[in-house]
Image (tube, rainbow, N blue to C red; front, top):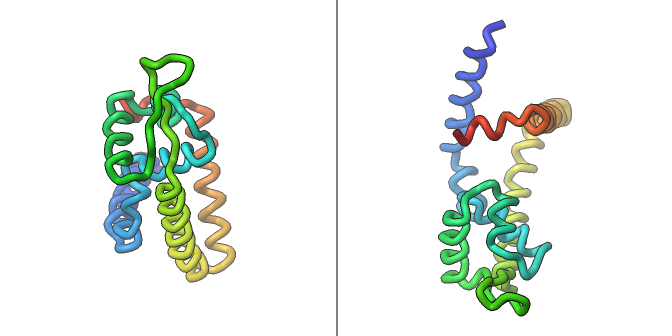
Length: 147
């Protein structure tokens, strides 16, 4: 079996999936916005450095993201009581509302697609995606992709 050819097909499919209307309806999910908001919803008062580590991106990228979210009123920043040079970031009620709304919309869209696949194909798809995550996490391949 030519795994390189299969990988090329998979990359092409990922591109095609990204161009579908369902993907364009998920802008909040892109650029780490959803991850950041979801993380802040469960970890209020987070140092940006911690968010950077959890997201696997640079502190500069997190700074830009947080500035964008702050401008939209989705997060708030406050000085760290233990170290005034540091800031802590929390999600705002508006941010929580936005992430919950988008989560519901995206879940509904995906559920509709899974229903059209049927139970066997839907379970097979989920199983394969879970296996890919397990393999990549176990082998550490995600670090090779960033280089």
